[in-house]
Image (cartoon, rainbow, N blue to C red; front, side):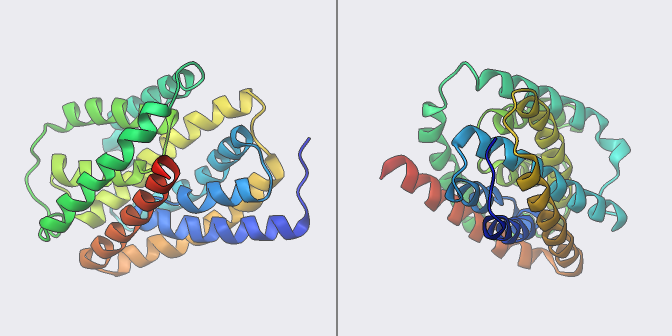
Length: 253
């Protein structure tokens, strides 16, 4: 069994706090927590499994905070949660047999498209708009697609969900962020179950990081509820740019 030192656990707690804070506002917390897990010496499969454990704490905390703030009604999301869970299940199974090399090439390009789309449309997500896709069809399509993606690969899932909610259902960025956390929690929990079945979760490290995630996600989601959509837009663009830079460096350099 892999054992970590006390200093390493403190490092992971700090990374999880920062990751939970960032993720609760704009997604992308994994660009902080996964490198931290790798940096303390965990092999990739164990780092990814442990990351899912700690991410469950953060996404659940943020989702519940948004629910208490009146931003989310869970009973309206049963279809979306079901489709996302199914997509994550299929993605987690597929990643064990299919190479992720193609996705590592494509995802940075998709993130560039999201970044430019948001940058060139400063009004996007500033106010609630009529939906462009019927909600049932939206949750069927994006639940399966983004659930699969999160189970299979993962980086940028929160950004993809946020832009989908804004563009497809006409949500403003605050409401999109709140609903994104519900979907993130669903796919994280589904993927975690399979990582645990495979013995690819380091329990102590995951729980220590989970405590950091709870604190960070609580603070970040409170900040979203207190601030306007313009703040979320700036934060969102910054996180997408950071995710893009990290993935592009790893992929092309």
